[in-house]
Picture 1 (tube, one colour):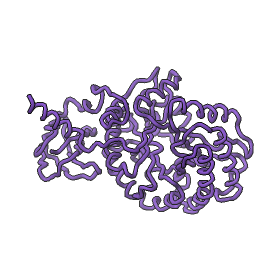
Picture 2 (spheres, helix red, strand yellow):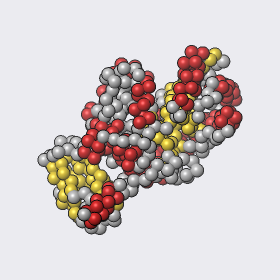
Picture 3 (cartoon, rainbow, N blue to C red):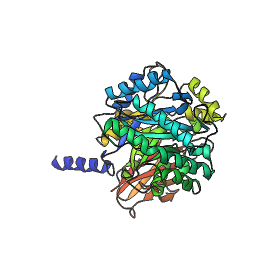
Picture 4 (cartoon, rainbow, N blue to C red):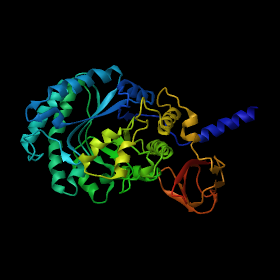
Length: 444
């Protein structure tokens, strides 16, 4: 009996190999409504999944429609509301104030043609900050990001990056001083740029012009192909590695303001692949936790068809895959009260394993039991050989380490692992029907 217990203990320790404790990392969510419109309910689902901070977004012209004309309904219905609501739940907020929102400048009327480096623009923005902070005396901020996916708007125009870097350099200290006067704490200031531009061979240098003036590297991350279908969940490992390689300085931590994955089959995805994506996110985050300190899961609930139909014209993209990509980013569904997708329970299982907070998960719907019944990868853990069986023809088998590096590629259904070091690996099967199956294995 004693030997049996020791064996169980050993296998358990192997199963969680490579998973790291929470440390000083922060998990956030964008909280969206299900059809029932109950925000409290959606918030509690995120809190049960270890939410410590909330991602909130508004544009400068939401606050100030014309220069000097502040929107009182926005102040009372948003700023004053969040100042008492989130502290009541002991939650912080990562507040995103967009001067540029992906494809357009979102400024008060009167500043439409003014450069960001212009003293007039800087002066008006400082006055806007005065208004924001005067209505947030109680709310603790995880960060203040000024601009959302601004690189999409700037493209390859280096002068616009330089112009905005002067703007950020001019208002960063002012914002930090205002916040310190309220809370006696430092405030991280960032500008949210897309992951694509941060690691792109040409655009990355332009992005650094702006990020050289910020406290954090703020980014949005969605592993998309050019046609708005999803890349395989395994892309996470390479993508995280590229980002950390571009920004290795741990004194300027990386914040994922948005991190999401569609579950729509139109986007070559599924609930299972979305769940696998988030499992990979936590594994990759473990590897790079010295650099990546904050991550927002985008988002709690799917958007409705009506919400997406209203969003699409803003981006000017009339594509079914883009529509479905936006609509199915939630880890819970939209209709009625909303129901948990596989990703929701998987995230909770990942958090539970790492003792992130006092949460539990339904193992029967987590990634531990998502493998299709027609696919078997065994034994797991294994020391020497891995066998793959599938009723659907397997075209290629890839084995990756936790950094995303492909360490083995084969078409054989029996793979020798004796040359690999012990650790966690990911087996990806590329099937003849176009689907992809991925599973974590442990090499003893």
